[in-house]
Each structure stands twice: as structure tokens, then as C-alpha cells.
Length: 522
Image (tube, rainbow, N blue to C red; front, side, top):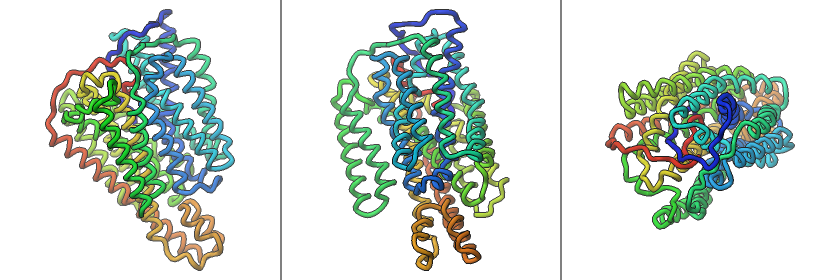
């Protein structure tokens, strides 16, 4: 989700770049394009999911891993990548991350089956975890404080302008070519970016003292992964309890570790500051609701409303465009009604959009959907940047270096759990509401249960008798999406209430000495 928060001031890198001013601005442009690729990934791959399901026989669980697993790996990587960049050099780390992202995209483009595609997606998550924070660190090192706002503004404008266009280009490809054609866009952009970055971007290395808390990072990653598996792999019964207990054990270990670590991932004193609590809750839940909606709606559009891939992209266009508009308006609005007022208003607008989407049917009018997505986009774009600034300002001095990476990681983890929770709700409702399938031909029942995208093929083979099955399955899936939208709206309202109730405490923004700070466009 686009954010316009300006990063904090960074310490001077050991290799401050020199050279013509035009070269530095050209570097800003190519860095912005690099950020754009992983930023658009979730939306574009969500549009690709119905085709992936048909061509690779992917189940609903597979699709949750393809989208949510990518974001989860990205979240975990963001806890360690800034420390690697500090020591290895920002440019070298960025080039490595881009190469991993591009190579993994090539694997996804020609994946013959789901396991290979999933492996490629998880590697893409590793690459994205590198690209997003390194872009901020490099830009901060290249410019003096007086020019940084403009430099980050160029990146924001690039992302805001191109974000709505990317899914349309991807949809056009998917309407004519195989599912992997979308990933070739990443390969092409990375192939062009690598030599330009090597040429335009100077090396920078802050050389921050102290070792990263590897044990704390491992425990935090274990808690996130176990929680994700509880929702995607287990879902119910003893398996669910087991994964949740494992997540609780990792979380307990993480908290204990942070109390004694010399350089903690996050100073636990931050959670004693009301501003940090409501701002972090806003960032995480807004991303959870946004990603969950973007994951589910393309499946509904294509499978139930029979919309083409380009049509899906056009339906999502108001959402993407108004996210950018909401972000652009948030800074000005914060000066008039305050940060808390912008956050609360944005959350409630976002909740109103999701509430409208909860009234969808298998025959919904596109006008209702466009209005709902417009409200959701405008509301979704408003709170993130002000909440990000508030969270950064509430960090204790001890977390000035590592805290921003924790904030960014939780934001992406929120997206992963949005996919997991949304998929859990929809799958449970879909399977519960399906009619009896015992009389179907061998294998047909399992095909129907695997996902709604398979319903049309089975129903067509059944002839006139398939019409009732098609209608029942579409109604069941739509009911599940409706429940997920309603649940997302309730979470956003809860976050708004917390933001209104908790007191606001002014805390000076810390000096951030690493590329770990949240990316303005990430």
C-alpha cells in the first residue's frame, strides 16, 4: 500500500556518492522502478491466481501459500536484511536481492507444477525483503537532508502513477498467454535494472556497531511461520492447537530474549507507549484487510462473475488509484485534523468500503463494487503514512536502528495473515455450504472442493444438471467472501476505536541509522 511518510534522518555512509547531480536523480528513478516491482506483486499475482489454479490444478491452500508465503518470507527477511546491508554495502546487497528476485521470477514463469512455483515465490520473497529496505538506505545515503524529501517524493510519484497501470498490463498478458507470462515482466525489469544500478548507484555502508540479534530474529520468524501454518495448514482440531502452541512458545521466547539482548529486534518499552500501540495496530490491520481483499476479490470476479483478467484489473483500478490519492491527501489532512483524526477517518472509510463489499451476490452489479472499492482505496491510503510517522516517533532510543525493520516486518506479516485468515473464512464457508456431491462422477467432487475456479469445468461436463451445482457453488463462495469482507471491516473499526481511546503521547522522532526504516512505498 502506497505510503508517503518521509524516512528519518540517517547517519552519513562511509562512501558518500559524488558525481553529477543528474546521475543521482537518474539513480533515484531506477531505484523507484525496482521498488515498484515487488510493490505491485501481490495485486498482479492475485489476478493470476485463477489461471494458476486452472493450469497447475492449484488448490485454495496452494494459492494462500503462493501469495501469503511470499509476504511472510519478505516479513522475516526484513528483520535481518538491513544489518546485512550495513556490513556488506547497500548497493551490493541490493544487486544480490534483485538478482534473486529476477531469477526466482524466471523459475515461476516456467514452473511446471505447484511445488516449483511455490519455491520460486518464496525465493521472490527473499529478494523483495532485500529490495525494499535497501532502496531507502541508498537514497538516504545519496542525498543531504535538504534534498531527501524531494528524492523520496520522486519515488512516491513513480509508484503512485505506475501502480494502477501494472495490473492492467498483467491482465492483458494473462488474457492471451500462460500464467507465467506475468512473471516475465519482473524478469525483464530486473535484467534492465541490474546494469543501471551497478553504473549509477555508488556503494554506501554505514557500518553500524553491534551484531544483530539473530536468536531474536529466529524466534520472531518462528512465531510468524507457526501462526501462518495454523491458519493455512491445520485450520482445525489438534493440528491447529499444536501450531498455535508452537507459535505461543516462539513468541514467549522472543519476548524473553528481547529483555536481555544487547541489540534487541525491538525494545519492549515501545509497547508501553500508547502511540506506538495504536499506530502499529493501524499499520498491521490495514495491511491485513487490504491484502486479504486483494487476494479474494479477483477469484470472485473471475470465477463467479466471469470477468476477464483485464476486466479484473480495471475493476481494481479505482482501488489502486484512490490508495495513491488517499496517501497524497493524508499529509495535508494531518495538519488540519491531526494524525489521529486522519488515521481514524481512513480506517472508518476503509471499513465502509469492505462493508459494502459484504453485500455482494453471484450476480452483483459492477457499480456497487466500484463504489465499494473506491471507498476502500481512499480509506486504505489515508492512515498508513500518518500511522507510520507516529510509530517511528514513538520508538524508544534503543530501537532507533532496529525498530523500523520490526515495523516493516509486522506490516508485511499483516498482509500474509490477511491472506491466511481470508482464505480460512472463505474455504470453510464454501465447503460448508456446498450441496451433497456424492452422486458426481469419480474425482469430480474433490475437484469442486479444491476450489471454485474448477466449478465451471465440472458443471459443463454434467450438462443441464450442472446448472444447479454451479449456482450452489457460486453462492457458497460468494457467501464466504462476504463474511471475510465483514470480518475485515470489524477489525478496522476495532483499530479505529483503539486509536481514539488510547492517549496520544508526543515523542521526538528517532535518528535512524540504517536502511531498516519502513519504505515510503513498501
